[in-house]
Image (cartoon, rainbow, N blue to C red; front, top):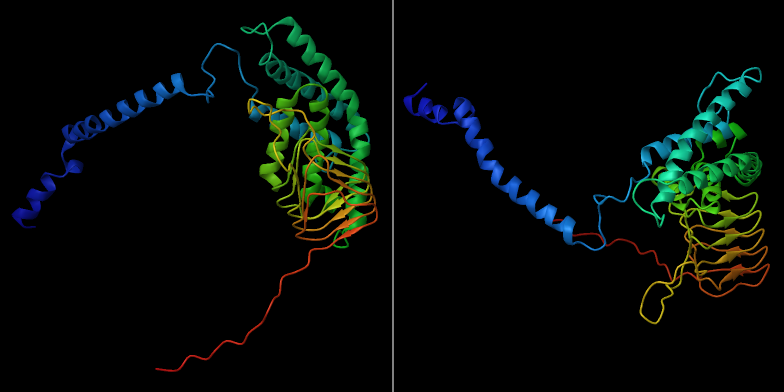
Length: 333
């Protein structure tokens, strides 16, 4: 090896021993310190505050809420999800144990969620604890009814999709049923006054399936989402019985209502009403709180609906002209 090459290696930080490493660390401290200080300043001045640093109590845990959700799915579909070794001989003890776990964990997360809006602030109060336990008790009582609704949703999927080979296939593999299952559970929590936990659940399903159903929406029996990717159902949407929706459908707001000061008015109906026995094909967009799609109607793919549709109507989008031209041959060079 040449002397020049040995000289270059001896000056390399990697070969410079502890002193070289200290110089590297020291050089990186200034940008780290400056960035940390700049970030902390934003915590003090930003509006809204994107942190939970003030002494206002904990936030619900998304991870623990999702863990409760998975136990609820096992309760609804025993032997399909969760423990694969269940039989009629042991299912009662297993479900009772699951419900014990669900009740305890859900009550804790619900108490945290309720306390976020408690006027007393500070540490958790007895009123929030009592409210959480009451909501969870009523939620558990509603589970048999939720399961009956889901049985109708499964049958609707089987009857609405010729590709479905069995009910088990739908329960194991269909993203539409997964999203609707989570929605029906979350809707009960939303109805019982725990909307934050409900939203955590439905947004988890949104990430899993690509289907976005707000827990505040109202959805009737025998509901089927086919394929599902890109479906959006807004907070104040109302959907009747025996409705089938394909991928890419949006039931959204036409505009956001505001008061005279420009503040958003919350709670007003902004999303459409879909009556019984309606089919909405892929890519359709239906907007507005005053928009009603009448019973038995069919909304075609890629349509834009902002006015009400009479019962037993067809909404069809007239396609633009489409031409097919032969390619021109390029001259050889």
